[in-house]
Amino acid sequence: MLLLDTATRRGARPARRAVCLAALGMLLLPRGAAAHERWFVQGGAQPVRIGDILSGTTALALVTMGAVVLLAWLAARLVATRRGLLPFNRLGIASLAHLYAWLPPVLAIHAAVPLIVNGVSLRLFAPNLALPWTLAGGVLALAEIVVALSFLYGAFTRAAAIVLALIGLVGMLFFSPWLVLEHCDLLGIAAFLYCTGRGPYSVDALIGRAGRPNLRLLPYAVPALRVLTGFAIVVLGFTEKLWNRDLALAFLRTYPFNVTQSLPIALSDAQFVVAAGLVEVSIGALIMSGLWTRPVILLTWLPFNLTLPFLGWVELVGHLPTYGTMVVLLLWGAGQDLTPYIRAVERAEARLDEAAEREPARDAA
Image (tube, rainbow, N blue to C red; front, side, top):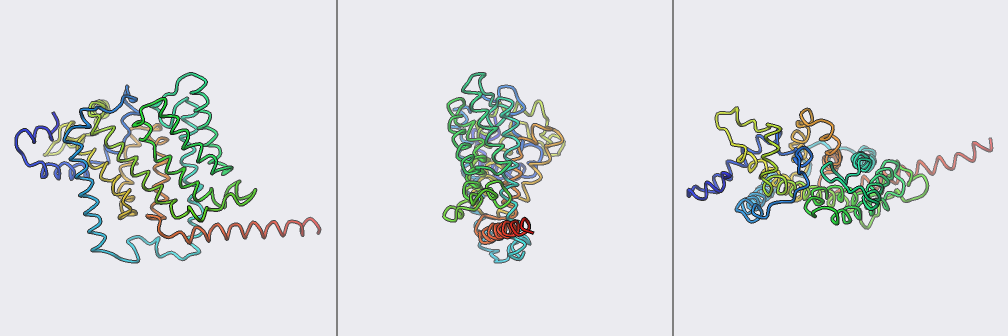
């Protein structure tokens, strides 16, 4: 039995034990919580366990998430500052405009690579979601490839974003909705690109004004990306750890990431799963809240990279959308200031218009 259940039966103080587990999990997160267990363990398409959903672990996780967000809010009130903790807020408008102009293509490329890899492998979004060898499965995989190419070239990007959202909905006919929701960060990327357009460096911008942001929807671009990415991390914390302990334990038997075994105070694999799950859902909740967005992204950079030498190309390709989102949130923050991006698009379009005006003059000469 997990430590939580044992502690409850023995009358131990659950709150104190939860704090210990969460603190240890935060320290040990780099070697466990960021990995996608379903990609590396047989039976990765198995659903969550109803018994785990109804256990006290769920209540503990919800309390932990709420406590972390509350503490972050209180800290933000205590250290409120207009300048921020990182230098991006202090860059000039011209520098920010140039920088922000590259964020839509960066995010689009990071999403396109795994979509192509999984599409040509007849999979939906991830290695554990193998589509059937049927016409319907082939059409869905082909749709992934088409969306990926659209994102890469920046052609008909908004239409591709809608198609990506529809792929996720149709995917729920093939797999458990929980398994598809694990990848709703892709839906966040689709929402972001629909609001911003592919930007000035795209085919859309060359053939018309489709690369421009939708000014009515633009305020929702980064918040949608942030909330849906945080939600995906929360879902993963539940579905791959807290609600599917057998899967997490099987992963640890194959990939011994429980480094507490070499420490004076060692956690069993079962206890480590709880600690990692609590940390993962807490980080997801923080990202969703928009509190301390840039520092949180910096702190989570290590967990999402340190597993790469151990898990290889599958982990790298699968995490590319997360990497792209981390770049956008690190540079753009929670998404309040949208002026630099609008100016970036306007300046890029002005340069294109000037180039178009000079071209006839050159032909005449």
